[in-house]
Image (cartoon, rainbow, N blue to C red; front, side):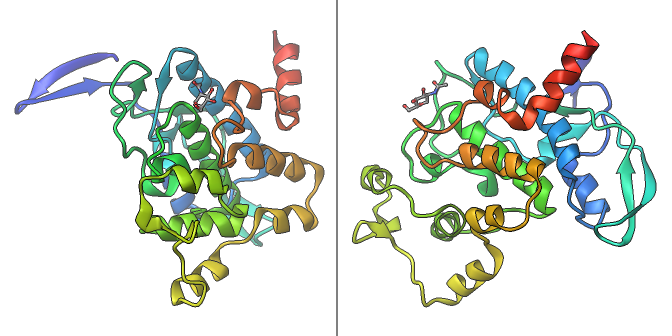
Length: 263
Ligand SMILES: *[C@@H]1O[C@H](CO)[C@@H](O)[C@H](O)[C@H]1NC(C)=O
């Protein structure tokens, strides 16, 4: 915080001026995906920032591309060989995490509904209680969005959201469905979802299973990114990777070597 003042009854906080958000940059760049190399650089910084929060008993609860800002979003125009078009290439990938308006300490009251829908973890949707792990899920969705150039779970309904998750990640473990108080989401111990509906056709068109992506011709970097994403988009919080662990994932080996060289 650089300063603060009151304006027409509102408290205003002055921060350093940053560049565009990662979402706004994607939008202004025709939703062209970031490269795996760019994702690695951004993810490493974001994970270190958020794992610092987690070490200090805080959960951000609203991680999304709109809340990750480039320090400076100046770019050059370059020909993109994958997409065969002119594209904006950022000069620097330095990012910062913003908007601590709903950040919650472990000892504070935990609102039952947190996060912006697309980035909301399954335990939040199912009202099973949440902690730092819900940030890990949100960041999994964010990295996927950087990779695809578009939102992974684009939906406005909770049941459809869960059905999309099943399409991408496989069935939700029955013990989680058993615990939920949201009984209208469940039918015969399974998701209350009509496989014959037009919504289901929409999902089939928009959601590709992670396993299918992994089995197609991915290079080594992509394989490691998707292995990491699989550990982050884990339904069961007891089995979901922590950010501290994620920073030691092989996907980030090139970042660790660079850091050592620099120090
Ligand atoms: C979050 O909750 C899960 C399930 O209770 C637990 O396994 C995990 O250790 C918790 N994480 C943190 C950071 O407290």
